Image (cartoon, rainbow, N blue to C red; front, side, top):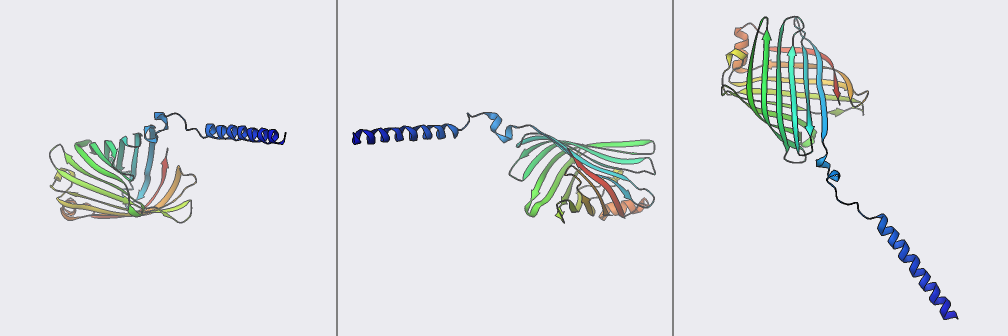
Length: 254
C-alpha cells in the first residue's frame, strides 16, 4: 500500500513538472518572424530647423535659416536640406536647396549623393546655378556632428564645404553648441564672389534652453571671415571681409 502511495505521489509530481515546463516553454516561445520586427524596415520621417535666427550685424541685420530632414528607413533615406540668408534692410538674399539619396555605411555615418540648387537675388535681378553633390554626414568620435560635401557645378566648377558642431550639456536642458564652418573652391567664380582656395571660415557659439527636446530658443555669437581670393574680390567691391554678430533664434524638430 505504501509503495502504491509513493508511486502515485511520484506520478503526480511528474505531471505537475511537465505542465509547468510546458507552460513556461509556451510563454517564452518567440513570435513568428515578420518584416515588421526589423527596425530598418520602419519608415521614419524627421525634420529639424537647426537654426532659425536673427543676426545683429551693423546695417543689414539678416535672417538666417538652416533646415533639413529625411524620409526613409535606417539604411536608405531621402534627405532634404535648405539654408540661406535674407537681409531685412535690403531686397537681397541667398539660398541653397539640396535633395539627396542617403545610404548608411556604418553605425554613425551616411554617404549621400544628389543635387543642389542655389538661388540669389539682389534688387530686381536674380541668378541661379546647379550642382551634383556627394557628401558625408554623421557623428565623428567624441560626438562631433559632421556634415561635409563636394559639389560639381553645371559649368564644371568644383567646391567643397564642411560644418562641425558639438553639444556641451551644462544641464539636461541648458546646452552650449560651438560651431565650425569652412568652404573651398578649385576655380574662381567671380559672378558668385568665389575665389580659388579656401573661401571663408566661420566660428559660432549658441546657448539654448530646451523647454522641450523639440523646442529650444537660443542666443549666441557668430564670427565669419572671408579668405584668400574671395576676400580680394569682396575688398574690390567694397564689401565686408569679416562679420561679428550677436544671434537670437530657435531650434525646433518634429
